[in-house]
Image (tube, rainbow, N blue to C red; front, side):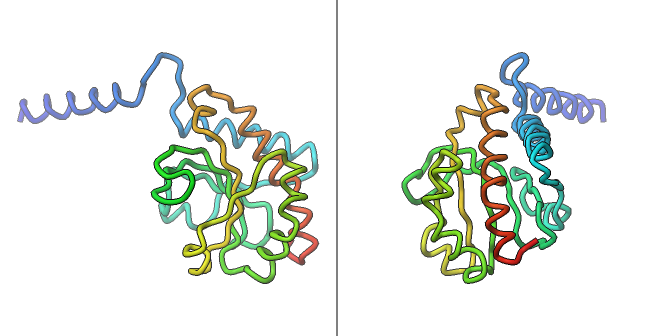
Length: 181
């Protein structure tokens, strides 16, 4: 039993060492929490109220993504997280992604926003990406702002929060005008 307890303690200390790379460096979860707090502050100045939880999070669907709700509709929301695509132009790269999720709302929301894509890009100062055609064929409609993962390594919460807030501030009124509040 003593050897088992010693093994458990050594496993715990190994896990801790893996999580802390450099003194003062934040975990990815801490980084996202700070980005969300700053995003909420920026959007509050523009009278946009945000809520952090969605039903899917309580089910543990994806721990590396944080969801933000700004509409009464639970099926249209924003999220931020990391990904490493297996296909497409960013194949194999680790990315920080801000998504507008509109699954199942192709004609009501996605296509009208797609028509305004260049205007949205101009106003947020970033390119918008779509899901691959095969993914969209399954009913998953998302517009994404992709940031290099170095933003996380540098701890640049302000840049990530600014992009997130701009994305929400520009797209929310457009989605509201489509009848989603």
